[in-house]
Length: 282
Ligand code: SAH
Image 1: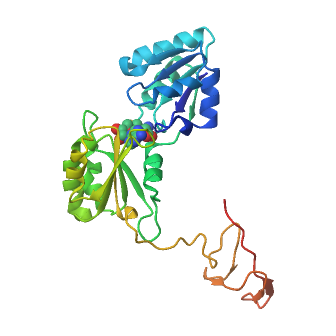
Image 2 (image 1 turned 180 degrees about the vertical axis):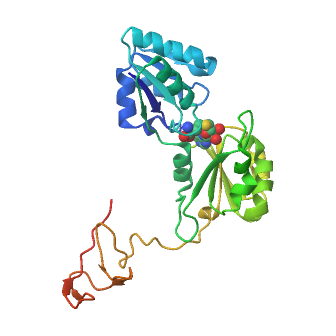
Image 3 (image 1 turned 90 degrees about the vertical axis):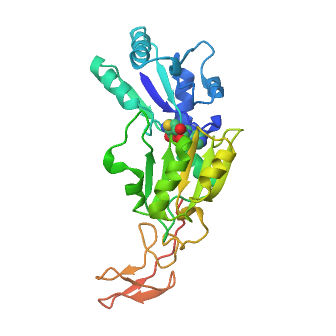
């Protein structure tokens, strides 16, 4: 089997248990040497063969996988963060489909989740934004015209920009047209690595501050009011809010009859019903 494994953002403890266990049984490890924390290779068997994919092109990677499979060896293909975001696994999977080799994808902790954790922020804050736009600025990989930053910014949503911190000036200028120059912005460099650094500002000054720190790669640009202090409390843990685990008595129009947990209340048809006790959600 070939396993595409999310290696996490840097801290080697941020790989999943499943990913780590699979690494431990694989005979061949192919890893993105330019981004992955090499220390993660300690989860591999001593005798495992390792290949740094930053010196390989697609056909060579597939050839290594093919040879391993022919001799009955399992392969771990490590990608930084989560393999479903900007990792070019699609082309590898298509090649494997063409030659009929089986594979699985094991998710990982994306640098987006890691950066938000470093900042101690929630990306989807009630009353602020319930949408996250994950994007990048065009470089050698072009961006579809309808996905340009200025257009995406019109939604006012939380935005995470990968692979683009070297163009922070243009990002800030383009985004400020819709978000306004006072919109909070943050740059998180190498989240969860020992050399991690955080720059906090607004669209007005984030470019200057980032350049002052000489950050030009391996960083996420995060933009949105979620970075600020203002928000509304979530309805999820509000006592009047019902869902699968705890519920008020729902009326036909969707509103609720409220009451204290354990006390009785009358339904629309006049029946007495005990108000449910609340249960904590995990
Ligand atoms: N699949 C990866 C993204 C790979 S693209 C993921 O889910 O995180 C590489 C880009 O990811 C970098 O240019 C940078 O924007 C971001 N990145 C990767 N690791 C990072 C980290 N530890 N801290 C901040 N950004 C990171």
